[in-house]
Image (cartoon, rainbow, N blue to C red; front, side, top):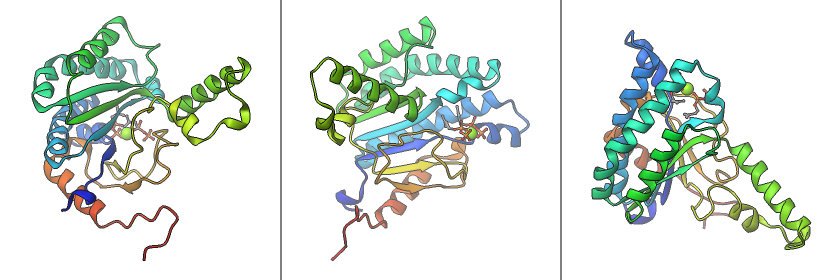
Length: 237
Ligand code: IPE
Ligand code: IPE
Ligand code: MG
């Protein structure tokens, strides 16, 4: 595969943990625990293949509506994993950024977010963006509110608002748009993920459940991407 056919930014909707657990007669949270191994594998593979940005959808704003025990298990798993993985992520040159609204998190989760971002800040091979309490619609509403405030304060005019100005007020400011969006488990929907940024992304919906998605599945996905013809509304000569 040549360099051009490797996506600069891959975003993954990690889905199917609950079904994976259910198929094995386990509790849903055990599926989430198994999913962490896939996160490790995919991060390794992304570094190996020279991907610069990897965004993983780990928890949507809608996911707060799940049973309390499951939400608590996910928060706990997040804290535990974040602390444990920092040294290995640093070794691989991975910088971690958490993307989502921070308001609803416990003090402990907030502390872990601060720690992992600080400890990995110098990573320069891959930026791993974890979408955690993320909602694309909410993100766009916040950007609209910000622009409205700036107009009211007289700092910008309404007519001056363009795509670049809107993009700069999203949570993904300074992150390139995803080239390739993968959703595991066979579901073919975005579930409120990167709605603005996905405008020209390529999509791939493998049947594989997230805990079964590893380095090989990642390499297969790269092959799929390499065969796509991205036209951006133009014509290929
Ligand atoms: C994805 O797996 C992980 C999160 C949403 C946190 P699910 O928990 O949605 O698994 P399924 O879709 O129920 O199988
Ligand atoms: C989307 O998966 C959110 C994450 C993977 C974190 P869900 O399982 O929550 O989405 P729906 O409910 O199937 O659309
Ligand atoms: Mg799901």
